[in-house]
Image (cartoon, rainbow, N blue to C red; front, side):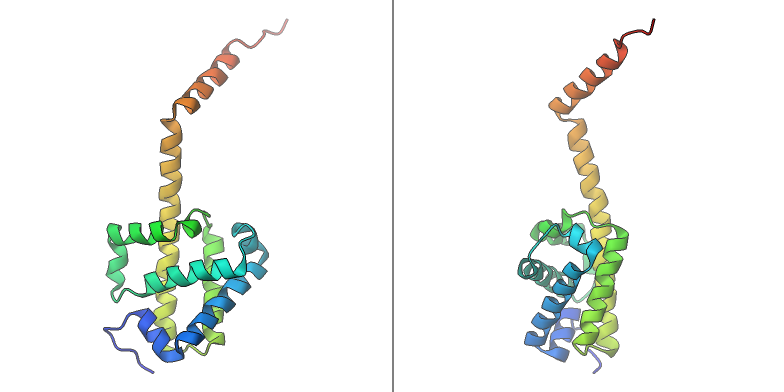
Length: 171
């Protein structure tokens, strides 16, 4: 099937496989993530159903935009992060994001997604991974900035540095 250029990846995907098969794709994807040792650790014991709900919401949101350029918009990206913060706060590494992508592609193949729709969804998932990586760096920077302005952190740093200055001298 050739998707309509004006269709979002989500619309093309659900048109090709149906909404119940889409739900099965997400369920399979989430279960295989938790079977991967590296990813299981990253998702910190999250239940498969909870992960599937998070992934379904995230994929529907990101795949729902018709234009890839929408994802460049900082307001849209901010909404994606805010509505899916439980996933973004995990701080997935690039290696883990690549594994996520491979599991998503395998789940699409298992659900008989092929051709142009497969490529369109694969590309959009790559965009999602780029957002994850960029936002991870942004969240780390915000955390670092917040810590550097935190009065308690400043006091602890001063106390630690003064202890170093008054260390006993060797005889």
